[in-house]
Image (tube, rainbow, N blue to C red; front, side, top):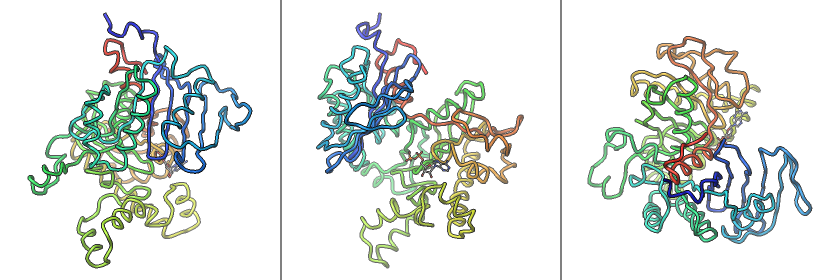
Length: 425
Ligand code: ADP
């Protein structure tokens, strides 16, 4: 008998992704994974904040007076002094649509939390102990965890009776073997400061690797997948039988692939050199490598569409930036092929991975020895559905699998609060 009988009709999950000055939200119905509302509040605490609220599944126009909106949405500007005010405004919008936070159909709130360290390998039902543990991880994610905590505290204040669940970006990677997770540095120093490779984008890697197995008609335990999450931030992972065995991001999201504004892999001595020879401060070097490097550092643009446009016009800097991006991607595909031994699929996801056919084509070109091939026609078909873009019968399938981190957070949240209920969607 379920301890959640009282909420057996409660099938909705609110997913919150709280940043330092933003609050993104989605309300999902877990009977079918559909979206009842999607929105965000930006510039919280600034002079003019903005709330954009849409009702994607209704498809209708729900604009009303005093607000403007396109695509069936509403927009509100005003001043939301803090996250509490922002969440109250979100609650008002949801109530306006008859799907308010006080509805008995709301089963739980799922929160994205960036860093779960070694402590959280699965989602956690939030209580004071869990909050204290997330707090303890702040030094490892000084920008993100405090913002995530703010979202949790605000939501708890509004609905203290409702189960709230933390879903961690690092959790999927906690299955990495020790030899993949440790840096080859002094063990005592590493342990004293919790320095190891944690990896990020885990919710996306979990979702996409599972969806890729489904696309192949297999159980996740039967397949080995390389997931390439290529958004503005980018990471690769090697997933063996549903478990992550390696990933490209490390102690922080700076390691690995070339990204929109991050360098990815770099000789650590570059940082000493900049300190000693260029006289840069640690904060300046941090900003250089995280915000002014990657594609934007190489050519001034971090949007792949713009880079492709410039390449078509013969721009050499854009061409070189693209080639460096692809070269790194290829190296990771090769490395993870070696790590996995047998690769059943390479799955592309996120903004660039889902949309940039040229990136997929260039990344796979010349990798026939690894069993990879591309069907040029399939690769250029645009679609929001998971799909195979390699030729039939290829040893390793190349797939495009749109990621859905909110659905995955909602799914994990719903599964945790009603373990005896089957997970849907
Ligand atoms: P994030 O969540 O990391 O901010 P996204 O996954 O939304 O990033 O990806 C954003 C990136 O996707 C943009 O910077 C842009 O380069 C790329 N992108 C989006 N649409 C396209 C497209 N049609 N073609 C090429 N690149 C695209």
